[in-house]
Structure formats: structure tokens, C-alpha cells
Length: 282
Image (cartoon, rainbow, N blue to C red; front, top):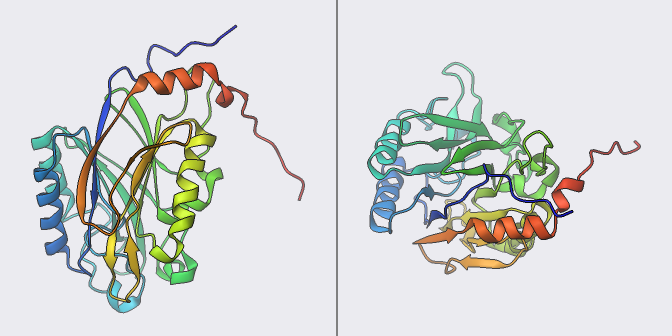
């Protein structure tokens, strides 16, 4: 017997604004201004997505972090994003480096989803990038960001989390009769020298989770001379490219994903409903 889509699954298309930016090193004013120019100049969208640590670029050093002015709530930038969300009727998704305590030199790489009604959902990057020293001053999160919008269930994670699929494995709980999420988003500062990994892992995450996957990366060189080529895009639940953003270009692209193909794939190939939690021997 074929299993049909649950009526609470998404029924309308979702329009996603992908803003591939060249971030100005540790200059929040310049980057917030660029964010605003980007979303205002792009076509209307339901969701606007920006790169990892959008206001600063990827910071890990003590001297750089000492200048961070964002607190754990995302202030002073969250009120700006809330105003944008209210004006546009869209959700804004980005990551910021935030100071966890005014007396403790500890930080988080925090994802924020800001809704038009002013509400905010947040979660911290789960895997700290030890190769760049992110583990020295940052505290790791323990779950992806989860939200619902326009009938779609979304999960989101940050950059290095892409390498650890067990952290956000999709499933099909019997009581819900639908997947945990329909769209998986990654925001990143992924370097060009390892861009082949980015390009391989994003469609793999789409296939194994039977979900659309959006990967939004920055472009340009950072303060340390590390080059970023972007290679942002959207992949279907079959791992096929839906849209690819031009490389090495600061540009905004609006991509629409439709629920019909998502439901059809899950109906014909109900792999998610066969997922089991296994205990592996040590």
C-alpha cells in the first residue's frame, strides 16, 4: 500500500532569497548596510538567508573577538532584523558571533531566525572548527535550529556542521506522519580550497534526508587572505541541482521550491519511514 502525504505538509511554494555576500572584516556597520541593500534590491521572498557570521566575517582570535559587540540575544542587530522581517513579511536567517557573558570571554556562533511578528528562534553551531581555533573561545550547541514557516518545516545548521550528518538526521515519526523537516539550510564561510567537499556534501545531505537543501556561502577573501568562492545553491531531495548561484560574485538570487515534487519523491520512495536508530558496538 502506498503511503500518502499528510495534509499538514507544505502545500504552497517557498521563495528563498539567497544573499551571497563579500563580508567586510569585523565591520558590522558595513555588513549590516550590505545586508539591507541585498534584500531590498532582490525580488520578494518568504525567507532571506545570509552567510555565517554575517556582521563580522569568521572570527576566532582573541584580539578579533574582543571587539565583538553582539550580546547573547543578538542585540544590537536583532532589532534591526526584526524591523526588516516585519516590513518584508519574511523570515531572516543568519548567524552572528555573540558574547555569552560580559565577564567571561566565551562566545557562540549563533543562528537566528527572525519572524515578521518579532519572534526569534536560535541555536548554536554544533561542531567547532578546531583547525581555525574556534574551539578555544566558543561554546558548542547541541541541536540544529528548527522552525516552521508557510507550512514548511525547516532545519538549519552552520558551516562545519555539514560534515556531521548524524546531528540533523531526518526522520518520519509515526505520530506526526510527516518528516521532521522539508528544507535543510546551511550558512557558511566555507573556503574555496575545500569547495569540492561543500559541493559533494550538500547534495548528499539532500538525498539521505529526502529534503531540499540550501547552502549559502560567502565570497571574497577574509582578513587572513582565505579565499571564498561562494558556490551557493539549492538541491532537490533527489540530489539534483535546483539553482546554483554564480561563483565569486556578491549577488542575491531568489529560488522557489515547490512542495509537489517533495511529496511525490517521498510517496514513491518512502525511505525516511524505514530509518532505524542503531546502537553500534564500541
